[in-house]
Amino acid sequence: MIAAAPPLYLHANAVLLGEKGVLLRGPSGAGKSALTLALMSRLEAQGDFARLVGDDRVGVEASCGRLVARPHPAIAGLLEIRGLGLMRVAFEAACVLHAIVDICGPGETASRHPEPDEKIASICGIALPRLAAKDCSDVSVARIVFFLQEITTI
Image (cartoon, rainbow, N blue to C red):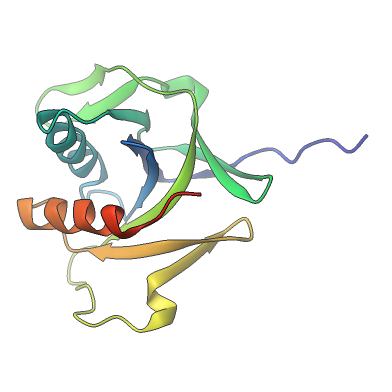
């Protein structure tokens, strides 16, 4: 029997929004945790399901043609909320990822009209729809919610 490869740990957040898992990537200080909190708050306010999977370090692995995300065991259930510190929140032990959102770093901007290859990102050999977001503003949250609505789940 072949042993499964260990997960690839990324400096990223994973969140389950409704039925869709989203990986949020970006440089340190880009606002991954703030965006995670804003997205969860938006969906919960609409009466939809939203749950943290992992904050800051997320393990990803390919499984049966899908990309699965899990929290790092040492920080599972913790979300950094600036001004409050690390807070314990409800979390999911895993989710299938359906999309990737890359948050721009300082001085970077998202393409107004991205090329087709900018709309896809691959991790562990699994290609997923990708969106570049400027920050964690209400406009970025709205764009991400719209982006996720356009993705059909399998």
